[in-house]
Length: 420
Ligand code: HEC
Image (cartoon, rainbow, N blue to C red; front, side, top):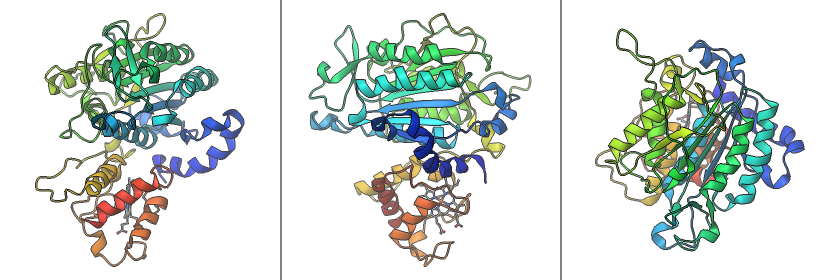
C-alpha cells in the first residue's frame, strides 16, 4: 500500500482515540486529518537529498467562507472559496503528507474558533514537535473602510458590516502565536483588500530548506479586489495558480548549466515570485499579490516549503493532480448539477486516476461509459448506490473518500458520471 492512501484509512480510527484527550468537544469535528505521517515524506525528501529527520510534523488550518445567506443575492455564494478549501484540503492530505488538517467553514469561522486554534491548540502542537511546518490559508470575502481591512463572516448582512467581520490585524496577531511557536510558517490569504496583512515587503534571500522562517502571501494588494476566472478552474485565481505552481512550475531554482531548473522542493520564495508574476500577468495587473516576512526578528534564509509534485509524480510517490479539468469545447450539459458534479470530480483528485471523457485506463478505469457497463471491476452491478459505495470505501488501489467528501458531493459526482 502506498503512502497517501494509508493515511486515509487511519483517519477514522485515530480521530476518536488520540484527539479525545486533548481537544475540547466543540472543536473536535473540525479535524479532517489527524495522523502521524512523518514516515511518508521521507521517500519524497530523499529525492531531494534530505531525510525525515529534517522535518517535524505538518499542520494546517484552512479557513473558508463561501456562504453568505444574508447578503444580496449576487454575493451570497462565493463558490470559488468553497473550491479553494476543498482542493487545498484534499491536496494537503493526499499530496503533501500533512499530519493534521483543521478546516473551518462558513458559520464555524468566528473569533472564538480562530482563537482556539491559533492561540491555544497549534502553538502547543508546534512546541511539542520541533522543526514542524504550519500553513494557514483563508479564502472568502474581504472588505475595507479605506484605513483597515476585514474578513467578512458568514453572518454578514451587507458588504460594510464590520460587526460581522474580523479585522485583518486581529488575524495577524493571532497568527503571531503560531509564528512564535513554529519552525516554518506560511500564511496564504485570498480576500479582497487582504494586502494589509503584511507590514513589510518582500526581499529575496537565499533559501536553505532546513532553516526556520515565517512568511505570508496575500492574493492582492491593500486596495485591491481579488478574482475568480472559470477559465482557470473552479477556485480563485490565487489558489488555482498556487496548485499550478506546486505542480512544478514554481520550482525555478537552481538553474543548471544545461538550462534545466528545479530541485524538487518549492520554497516560500520560489512560490512567492511565481505567484506574484503569474497573477499580475494573468489579471492584467488588477491583482498584485504581496509577499513578505512575518517573523518577529526576520526570517533570514529559511522558510516554509512544499514538495514539487512534478518530481514526486515521476518518482511514483504521488498521483497526478487535475490534468483534464477544463470544460471541454462543445460540452452540452448545461444542467447545474452536472457542472457541479464535474467540479467536485476534478477538485477531489479523481482526475488523477480516472478519465471521465474516455474509457482509457489511467491508474483506474476510464469512466466515460461506466453507466453503460453492466458491472464494475469488483463484480457489483453499476447502480448509483454501488458507485457511491465504491467512492466511500475505495479498494484495489483506489483511496476511500467516505470521510473526505460530503454525502451531497458524492451524489453530485455520481450524477455527473451517470450523465456521461
Ligand atoms: C489513486 C488513484 C485513484 C483515485 C484518486 C480515485 N480512484 Fe477510483 N479507482 C482507482 C482504481 C485503481 C480503481 C479500480 C479498482 C478495482 O478494480 O476494483 C478505481 C475504481 C473506481 C470505480 C469503479 C470503476 C469500475 O468500472 O470498476 C469508480 C466508479 C471510481 N473509481 C470512481 C472514483 C471517483 C469518483 C474518485 C474521486 C472521488 C476516484 N475514483 C478516485 C483509483 C483511483
